[in-house]
Picture 1 (tube, rainbow, N blue to C red):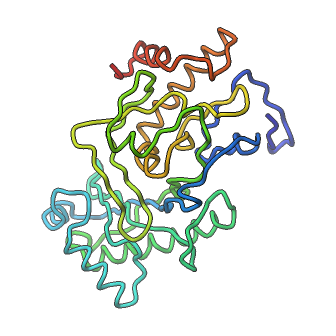
Picture 2 (picture 1 turned 45 degrees about the vertical axis):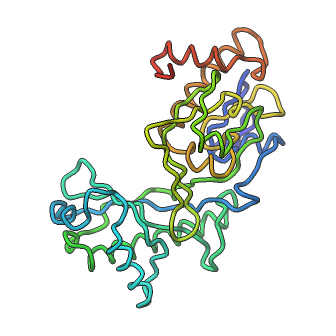
Picture 3 (picture 1 turned 120 degrees about the vertical axis):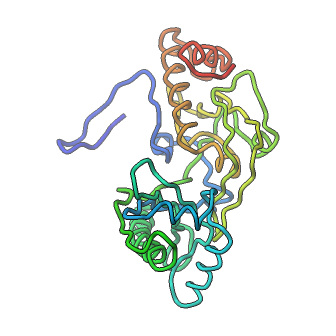
Length: 296
């Protein structure tokens, strides 16, 4: 693999390369196959931030026990938009943090200034997402300060250094996590991750949610293995998954397990001199359990 560094071009030689870019950049540059959302429509990126100076007791009394905004807040957001504010997301998530007086804000919905979906694999779209995201952070912080009890003296504590990206390229793998796999909580012998997370599809002003109640599905090892190319794996949201399935399997905790599985697969492939496609997902699962994963 050739990389561009501050000192110029350099070459990395490895027996196995793991693409953990989230965007399948390595697979893409190597000519591997991929899909992009639902016929090119992808989930919106977001800009997270933390609000400080909050009277969290008063906030919680008003907001209630759920992290998702209550109907009264949604109506306030609609009314603010009618008055000329720019608050495109009207169902928002807010989480008290372990630090006193602080809320974690998952509120923004980033689209182009012309309303189009932004694909951050395009550097112009990525730049626009960063600009729009910071504007929305300011606007939502002002809304909370003016309208939400307990937030009257709040301020932006910090914001994410880069926009959060939910979806870009998904590889074409030797196995695919399907929408039905998630909806029907499918278990499998080659599963390398258990996932109870809902389908959390962020597109449009209100997210679509499909909950798995007291159940989970499992992600197949083959979803980390590209269908073409040698000595390549992925670890992260760039695995092979259908659009709605990815809206569940893309989140942080699951990505930890994809990295665990990819590392063990790379080790087995090198030690046995076997192609990654010929490895047993069931054996990788067993080795993950030996390492402390709780898959069985």
